[in-house]
Image (cartoon, rainbow, N blue to C red):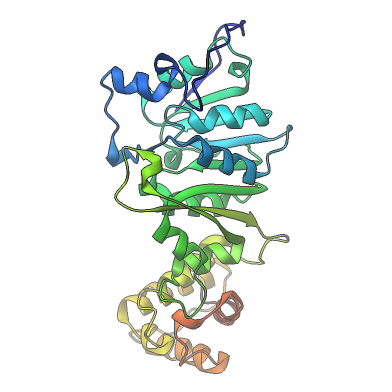
Length: 325
């Protein structure tokens, strides 16, 4: 990615006449973009949040301090960005579209906000996350899941407030036994406290998305859970592949047993411990069955297991030197 540093010095601006809650037509960045025939790319999740009341509510609920560095993903024309800049010490914005980067630079040029903004041109999923205290974003919907997992692995932030599809928000907040409870739910809730903040109608965007949206807040748990994120996710991938099936049935699958036996042998070899006999996997399959039975989870189904259940199951497998990552 490219780091676009602020250019020029802040200068004085003439005050603009306001017409109700609307900006003059020429000063509205969304209007300028439309006038320049810059088409928003829906495949990149470019749905610009145009309602200032929703923007204000997000900023107010984010709990921004004057000393905070805020991370924003997909700033678009900057409607949320300028409000974040007004409250934070610094905003670091990832934008993948050079056209919108140019528009955002124009919007803050020669204003007191310019030195506080750093724009990173590139794909946030393909780059390391910079230092930040808060993440506040109208998140491009197609990267919601991988970005949330990236945040979990990063872990070093105070809170995240993001706009996502309503169904995705419902999955994030779903509890064991709920229809939408999933690998995503269990994974995120182990590492973060998750809360629903507000619903947002699709009429608040341009172009409007096909689905309704919602804002959610994530706060990392302190202290951190005593488990590696990749190891826990590896267990969840197996358990939630068919969440309504018993774990004994799920762990009997040949592909699952082959993967776990490979991990098991590698773990033992790395520690100079004897590997199980080469009997076509029969002894390892028996080891897995014994772990599930003795831990009391053989008849359990992932759909109804909470974070404590899943951690106890992972611990039982790890004690038998069975690893998931």
